[in-house]
Length: 352
Ligand code: EPU
Image (cartoon, rainbow, N blue to C red; front, top):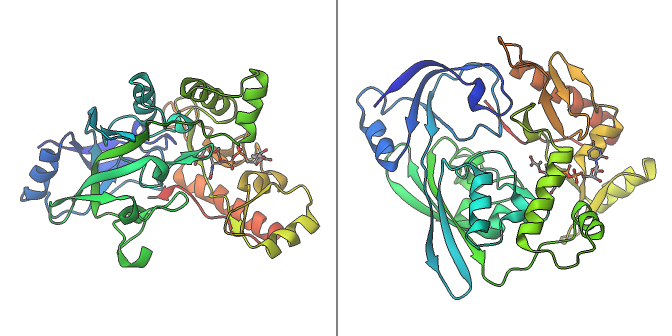
């Protein structure tokens, strides 16, 4: 078992923030997890599980032992009357996995193309885009308990999925007492991809593509291509500009709160939800407070989508926004949105 010391994490987080892991170990298999937990020196150390690093803000060096998950493999595990059950190792790149499922003829993940990160990280925040969330296609996952080494399986209900939320984001005292934050290492995830596939439509950006292409019945591959085009046009590529996707969640308010905001600002972008509440576009709220394109040090608000904070550093010779700058900018945005609209924006990535 090779435990590396003082490992730079800049390449291992999509924000490209400069920070180090005091110690880091690569986890390529379930066996590696068992070996680590039985190790006399490292077994009982506090641990931090790192996937693709696409949903974290590093505010300093990471002191707990970093477990870099690199468990690979993709396969069809079962075919039922209604679905293909497909499994991927936690270390697989999410987008490559989505592309692979389509190439095999299993549709259903195409709306979530190009989401950065790994398969193992995808259930943690219940990733989603263009009307499909991971929970809509989720079958089950296997995870290892980092205290006991026991491997267990969770179905969707046990994962406690919510909007950009799951049991993996909460400590034992949160989420109805069943939080698994810091406790579980996700090994493999299985998806149920429907044989009777229908495109999930209804998003303005997708509707525009259908009009442009005079197409009313897109194939899964067309949906995949359009989602990639839409994302490339409005979201920064983390390989070029460091970022962690949407930095805040879209807030939900009561119809009365929404009416109050509309009275003050009729243009507020909002969507009525099935339960009667109203979801507001956080990007619009931030944009209308004048933040688009603004910076604090080298941390900035992306100029094409105000919901995304970016690292304006060149990435060379330590020229990078610090996690502190990102958080200062985030707090200033929260304050100004609160002062103008009375809404507290919730941060979406995990702050480490
Ligand atoms: N808007 C503005 N100004 C901005 C940004 C947005 O006016 O600077 C307006 C847009 O014009 C649009 C509305 O706000 O009317 C919503 O914007 P968009 O369609 O880009 O989607 P979003 O609500 O900002 C969410 C997800 C994205 C996901 C898209 C598409 C969250 C936190 N974000 O963004 O997910 O790709 O919908 O489904 O729910 C992510 O989680 O990292 C992510 C990128």
